[in-house]
Image (cartoon, rainbow, N blue to C red; front, side):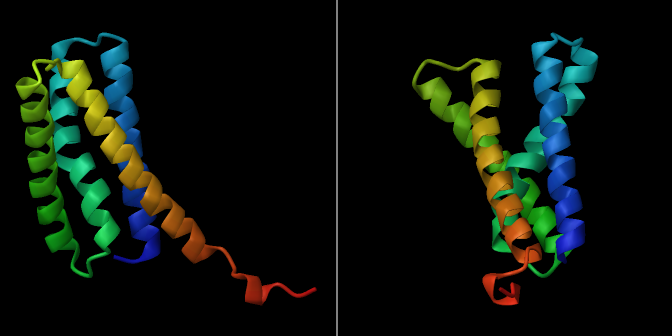
Length: 123
């Protein structure tokens, strides 16, 4: 995936993350929270981590992102259950931290790739 489509996907993932957090904070009805939450867990944490690999095949990246997103969601939930601290809000918070770190790293990489290097500046 080239830089422009990747930037679009990163921004869309960030927008979905904000929508889920706003829906949770505003105590939106479950008919809105559940589809957003499921889409978020399936797409965003996995893409945040798999996107760092910069795979050449977009279909493989999408499939792997879904699998990793589900695995991360299960691992976070299971860990919180084992510690006796599971709540939906806490699980969402941990997933949000993971996703924000991965998406932020991708965004920094994209900005660095687009910005001119020190060799292109003339005194």
